[in-house]
Length: 115
Image (cartoon, rainbow, N blue to C red):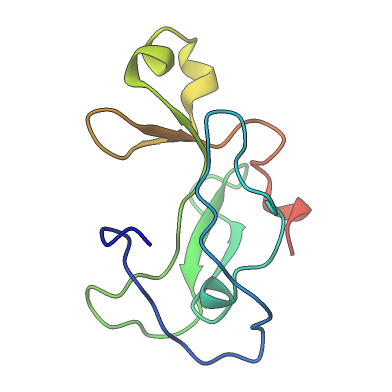
């Protein structure tokens, strides 16, 4: 187990079997559409009131400062790969560090396909 990966413990009625599933260049996850029990207790997604065409992440309850409430995953790309693409393809990217950018590819961007 990588010591740099935070470890979280929680009690939930949703828990089945959860394990770390690191994304790769070609695979976002072995189980990309499975519900995340940790997130299910803390957040939900709905249309934004600012721009009703986009979705936003909202808290289900009052959350303490500095608490992790959600996880972001995607295929792992380099900055060069991302920089060389059309910007419209990069709208679901997040920089992890100097080497890695996470990208949620089209086909995985709409919450309606998840739990």
